[in-house]
Image (tube, one colour):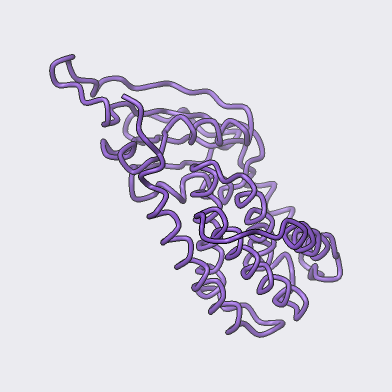
Length: 253
């Protein structure tokens, strides 16, 4: 049975416009040079949710635009980029453009493609502006410490709740996004698959054990699952060069 994704569009648009309000309010309350962790996290998560939803429902232009905003916000919240007047102004204008894009996608307005293109270029210009990158006197020490605890990969246990597909989310899309991050080994657990008489095509019975190898940041993994965090059980465990193999006891229950 094929799920009609259009039935979820209205919910997506409603939640996205609410997310824009969160972003706009948060940006207006931010001051240059200061980072309120709770506030910027709320702005980032709103942007990430819009990006994830737009990608799920096929609004690739919205996903691409929001991805640039999300990248800039991520650098600011991690302390890799200073909060400047220019960055805040560009992000606020981008919220306005994103609102226009969502309105047009919902069939309630026209879109000025040139305005979108110009604003995307402005976002990219801010991202490429190294003036906003903070200098750190502790880079060497931090790098040496990181080497001692180098993560060479991640072990994930991904167990979608039965209702996941009913919310319009596809576990296979999640796996494809993870695979784009690095070399991945996957083992599918079919132990909960029922007999034919009890099988419901709208429920998910599978789970996955995943080894994601390489230098992948934890935040990248979190971003993949952010859109479905309420629809799955997830365990994410770092793999170190000298770490023993994980046993069944490490899996979530």
